[in-house]
Image 1 (tube, rainbow, N blue to C red):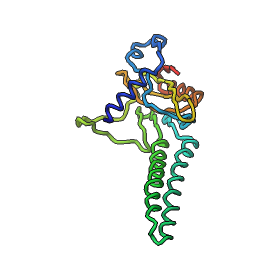
Image 2: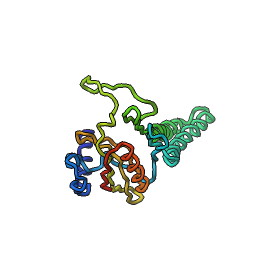
Image 3: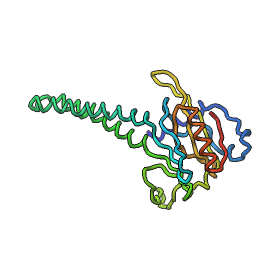
Image 4: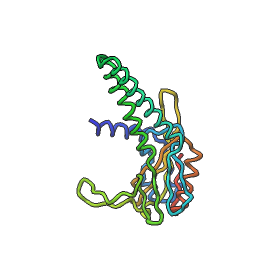
Length: 221
């Protein structure tokens, strides 16, 4: 069921993606590369900024806005847990509705907030000294895929271009654009790095990253 839903979403993204003239990039690899949004979704505000103060390690770090966004969910969940629990115990543990509210409402929001806080604030690291890219708070070890084959980190020599793509997103509050920075690998596959709505910042960071890695910038935004 989830696989079918995923395929339907991908097909919708492909249909909604604007046509890109890959000839302007003067690269056969550009024709092999997909030009619809890779991550899907996005945000209307800036979630990350590239820290290039140390050219040996370039890091996309979460902004204060990202911390605040995740913090709101966490705070609502925390209050939704604590307040009903206090009322439940003060009522002599007889008001089971309060306990259910705490678990359902507070628990869900608190879990969502912690989930957002963990993943939104996770650094995206380009270690140019060791020549690898990874997403996480510490450099991961080798990992195993489903077939038991060992894979190392994404090697920067496999990155052949930086791709920037725009996605038009509809929400109950209106419409906005979100912009992806993707790594294009030698086989035409892609890895999403960040995805947010501040176009000027995305382009500045994409140019800095492309220059640091010595690869072209493919702007389809």
